[in-house]
Length: 131
Image (tube, rainbow, N blue to C red; front, side, top):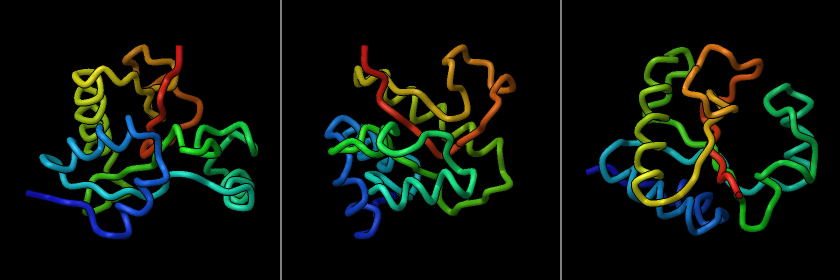
């Protein structure tokens, strides 16, 4: 059974307890790694400057304390394997839904289940949707 490394656990601990529960359930069946939870201002600005985020500080859900977003990838990571990232996202979203946690994935921002209509893909990004 897969489990998180200490590094992943430390990043997950910066996240909202709902995200923690979802990803603890996910990793029990689907090996994955937590890339990022909470982001400080300097890191958020860096991500925007690098084009990896479109949301400036402090508007990203990563900037909340605890973080309302987590960047998580199937392990081992293959950045070129979009199909596997999409499969993983489907597993995460189904797990979250079964747990009553409303999530949005960075491969389907408008949550319409169409994955080719995004103008900006962030395939490792999962965030809690409030309201």
